[in-house]
Length: 381
Image 1 (tube, helix red, strand yellow):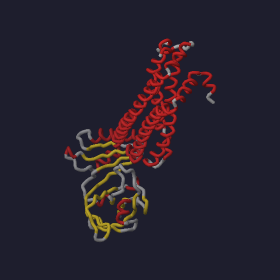
Image 2: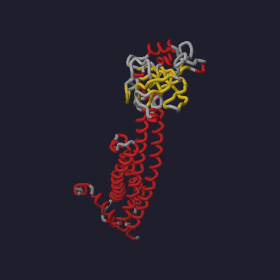
Image 3: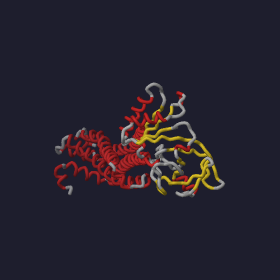
Image 4: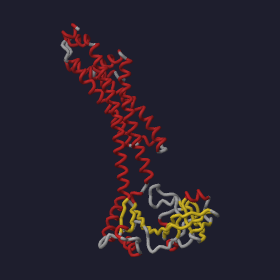
């Protein structure tokens, strides 16, 4: 398979033969490249998997906007007019969920009661689905509870709990949402908004079809509700998602930078190997120059040796890196095939290229030193 290459590039054949004359030394030099490529590719893939795992848990919270009363301006609650204004400025495909909250005594089982946050929502069927029971529409009675509370207290639909002294039948156990979402009902008790004894709404959760529409919705709400006074604070969770992604990108870059040090060490090892090879083959290089080899021919042979070390070490490192990536993705995101993401391929390719380039650069000085040797001096040595 390699014969056509050797006929076209005779320097490659000489380089291969020279490297096989000192197998152990060449192997140790290539091993440095292998370790460097594995370090860069593996840490790069680890960073990608970590970022993917976090953003997967974030889910679609980038599409969410939270509107709260501006306490700094003395606004304690959002009133019905605020809710109507919000519903008027958002898009037709955007869900608006006003929420009332209160801290009341909740008794899940006999003899066990605690102070809990209770959420009053008028339209829970628009944002929640039930894992047990059914979310009523319209919602006028009963209680909805999160899966974590249901599991902790062994509650299912049809059970009875006591909220602020009133017995309520559990209409449904709700499915969990995204972990970081404001709407995640995992640890919540939800009742009809009319049962919360508060004069207004503590928050409004808005879910848009996309992050871009969520951003536009937030801007319209600020312009409409804060026209005369700063009544509301608008929080866009999309900006939080972007910050998290940027942070993990920085972490990934730092990890790859640290791993690159191992390739620099490998480059020094190759430099040492090539210098030793130059000294040991001084007479041989002198003979080549004496029989007509030009400086560029010697330079080609020496650089080809360095390139072969980088290519062989890089290829072995790539294979081992893919194996390491399969293990990393299996244990971080539970999906080993995620190693074949485009971002991971970029890190593997960059590690291989960096390994080859490092090898060639490390061979430049020894190659120049060998090519610059005067034939007479080399033969006398």
